[in-house]
Amino acid sequence: MSPSPPRRAAGDLVVLLSLFSLPAPAPERISYAPQLSSATLAGRLTQPTFTLEQPRGQFSHLNVADFDTIWLVLAHSHATQSFTAPQRVEDTPVPANLPQRGYYPGNELRVLRVANDTRCSPMTRGCHHPLPGPGPYRVKFLVVRDRGPMAETEWSSETHLQQAEALQAAPGPHSAGTVVIVAILSVLLAVVLTTLLTPLIYTCYDTCGSTSISGPGELACMRRYNTHHMFSPSAEGGS
Image 1 (cartoon, rainbow, N blue to C red):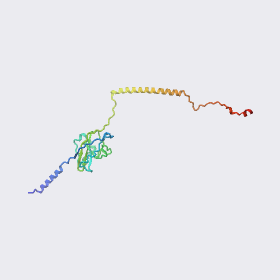
Image 2 (image 1 turned 180 degrees about the vertical axis):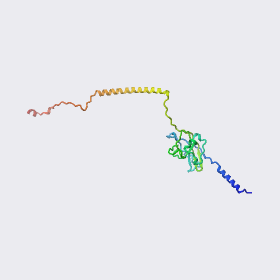
Image 3 (image 1 turned 90 degrees about the horizontal axis):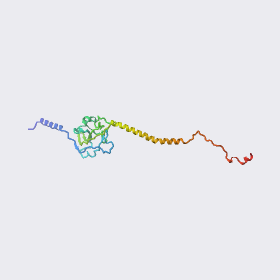
Image 4 (image 1 turned 30 degrees about the horizontal axis):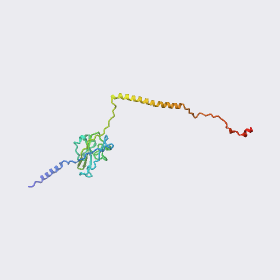
């Protein structure tokens, strides 16, 4: 006896619901961890940014299409254990959610300088806004399609950003000794300058005081005389 049509419809519905309730497949794991750029690169670590090496050739051997989007996920080190790749772009947190969610992905990297986009708002999804603190942070690459994440790399090692340190005054016990040293050095400097300048001033005064320099108003007196050939013999005979 064949089963009744209503029971077949109910069985098909159960199978269909079971298919929809299946969890999404886990992303394929790529045995690569992002690395900081070479130590010779200037500015690879700053207060709000850090620079990564290009992951050349890491996504070519997998089932990754050219149109797939590669995201860079940035997270606090303590949030990596609870990270789950979001299934939809709409579910991804923005940089402003980093303190609460512990991570955010971004895909607008022209170069691999993380958190270097100062033009975007921290409420913009997908941008890499400057980081709010020194970390430590860890990153991973995530290959995403329309139906969800397809592959992901390992988490990088911890990255600590540089911190600005306020200048502190010298400790109290050394202040008196510092004053004494400064006073002694000032006295020695005065003695040295006096020793060097005294001979120079004396020499200049002695030279300038013993030399008479005539001014433009002084006139020279010259005696008037006639030379021997001023008067001819004829003039003497006629006189």
